[in-house]
Structures are given as C-alpha cells and as structure tokens.
Image (cartoon, rainbow, N blue to C red):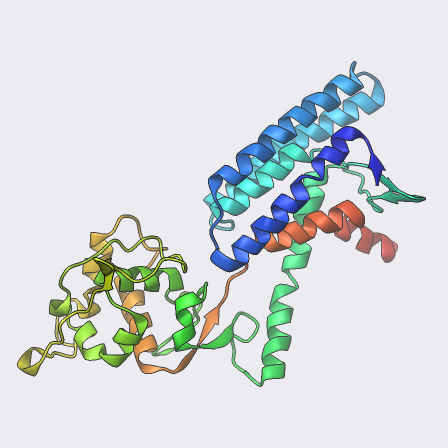
Length: 333
C-alpha cells in the first residue's frame, strides 16, 4: 500500500484501536494514557502536512485549512458535548478527539490500481466520516440483538435492547438489568454497581442468593471494604487473602428487611462510597438485589462498547470511505 509518509504513519492508529476495541469488550475500561501518544502523533503529522503544503495559498490550501479547522474546532468539542450529555463514555470521547487530531482530512492510499478510500464526501473531513460510519454501524446493534433473541426463542418487549443471562454469569457481565421485581425497565441496576456493593459488604453473588434474608437486614453489615469501581477483574473483598464472610443473623434478629429503615443497607452503601455508583439510587439498588436474589436468569442490556463500532467505522472509512455518502450516491441522492 502506497501513500504519503504522513498518511502511512497514520495507519499506526489501526492496531491501537483494534486493541482498544478488544479491551473495551472484555473490561469496559480503557486507560487514559492510551490516547496521549495518538494525539501527539496527530499533532506532529498535522504540522508535517502544513509544512509540506506551505504556503497554504490558493483553493487547495484554503480547503485544507477549513477541513482541519472543522475537525479540531467542531469534532473535538462535539466529542466533549456528547460526553457531557451522557451520550459517550469518557474513553469514547477521548478516542474520537484523538481521531479528530490524527485524521482531520482524508488520507490517500494506492493499492495497485485501487485508490482508497473509495468514497469521499464533499465535506472531506475524515474524522467526521469516522463518526458517521460509527453511528451507522452502531444502529445495526439492536437488529443483531433482535435476531439473536428470535433464534434463541427469547421473546420480550426488550428483546431488541438486551438478552437473557443466568444470574451466576452476572459476575462477569457488563451493562445493566432491564428488569425489576415489578417488570421491565430501561433504568435497572448497573452491573458494575452490583459488584461494587458486594465488594463493599465483603460478600459474593452466591452468598447473597444463599442468604438473602441476612443481606436484607442492614444490621448484618459488619466490616466494609473498598468497593473498587466494579470492574470484572477485581475479585471479592478479602482480609488477609481470605474472602470475608459475614455472620448469619439468627432468631428474632433475622428480619427480612421489609420493616427496617434501610433494607439491604443500600443507602448506607451509597453514603459510604466515593461517587454515585453509576447513578444508582437506593431504590434501584434494592430492586436489583431483590431480583438477583430471587431469579435464576434475567434480562440485561449488555450496553454497546462504543470504541468497537468506532474501530469498525475507522476501518470502513479507510477502505470504503463514507458509508452514508456512499448509500445516498447508490440511490442517486
């Protein structure tokens, strides 16, 4: 594959995003340090392109400046706005910001007689093409869930939003519950918050299901522990390497939690930790705990690790080009 040296160096982003997409699927955690080298690479290559095109006169020079200004002055703030409004995670926003710096304009590659990308929109801002490709590909995700559930025979009002999973598998799942004891919901308990709660108590999911009455009673909470951030790879709270077990509450003290002020010690947990546990309220935490204590399987929304369609959008942009523009052209629009 041939292209300018600066455009060839931009391809270093592809393996980095491939690794980021894999890690996002596995852990939903991406280190902040991942994006700084990409931004630095983009800044150096952009300076390189400016020097190579200098002086930036004529239509071509002005068009180059307009596209760079759009990528840096619009796509970067747009990424921050998406994060601020809750549409993006922090890593998603930083990933798009990095792409806006690395790919402000369309690169060009030659593979034999083939010139890539195949389709370039009139705007010609490559980071914007990556974003639109990402959105188009992400829209296919509910359809994939729908087909999967139909094949599995899992029919429910939320079949295009999530899937059923066994309760014991929630230890390693990401996303949130799509159910409460009262029915389906879009705002169920976040599974990272569930892991945080169990680590805070020094308990496990199996222990909660085996002794739900004890867990409902807030007086059963003894020593508490660092809840971490709910990541899957963190194990249960330990004391000297041994998983901490709480003493069972027997006799008259074995209240089922319905008549106490703080069932499951949910409010105490949220007051005791730093942060909000992914927007969890005492009520949503209690509802989620009741559900996982009583059910064998439950509907969850696995969520969409957005760096995954972003990686796919990047690869498609480097080869096909702009999916939306190509689709409109196909229909003569």
